Length: 425
Image (tube, rainbow, N blue to C red; front, side):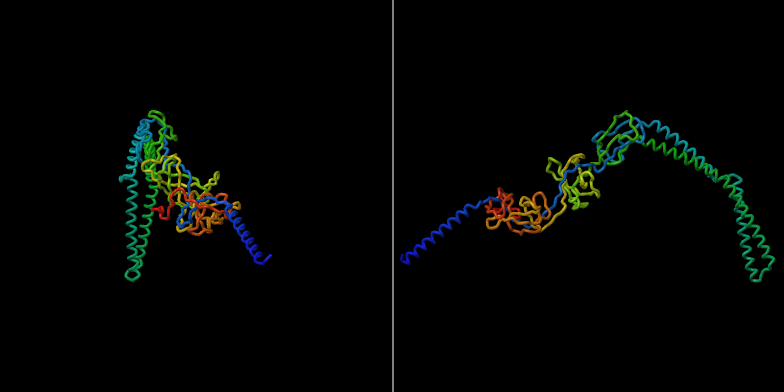
């Protein structure tokens, strides 16, 4: 066969093989599956760690008022729902016997005061008066003799007085001292044996009478039931005329100007909280958010649930929050700015316990491990593994193999920019 014919044949075979290979490659490429997904861009922004828990409302103050005496109820001045102030009279008990006892003891006190006044009056018995005058006279004589002796002692030392005059002054001083000491001892004896006992008796009678009077006065005051706090009457156990028993609650007053929401949260969440953190309460079935603040974080763990109890205080000026109501308590535990944030639906849990996301590049979704920071119900913080602007799959990525070819679909709603506006705005 001529050489040029052989070359033409080889060229035709090569062209046929190249065409066949291209056709097979195109067929294989067309056979590769394509999955529709929705993506979002990794954004730089802020994220908050919000702790959410159900809580029960309690009044800020509550007083169960119990009588200190047993007596029939004479009159009630309040009903359930009545707003009262601290010190306001709520009810009175029968007190005629107590009033009579108080009057009797008041008279006994007046009598004891009169006896005490007589015992301490200026007019002392004659013997006491004479002893007192003797003490005063001998004291003055003793002081005069002491001055005379001191003067003669000085003159004697200067040679201006003979010694016999100094000796005479010493004898007179000794006699005056003895007379003063005897008078003082006599006065002390009288005091110890007479006047002191009289005063003690009068003082004891007065104190006893005063104590009985104060006791009866206190018993009479117990017949008046007053509110210890500002609040609302929530319980009234009896009717007028029924017997009120000492130690049994008669009325309950709740101070509802503020309420406390008590909730239990996991220990890991409680570790992020501190007293003074801002909180919000929402009543189930209502969208109104009521501001509050954390006032108590229990230092102990509940042994039954291994959770930590926290209290949040909220003002309740219009009494819209009722004690005993269940509310949703939200507390912002952390807030981080200028960090990478993606939707929580983009995070995929791996069999080995790690987490990853599907990053879309060149129409393929590639699995990439990431490390997460704080997270809430909608978003998570990315500590490592992604860069701002990259696209991650948020819908259609569950169970998707690595490096799958994907087709990006537009989200159902208008996509918003970082400023909160749609591209058409």
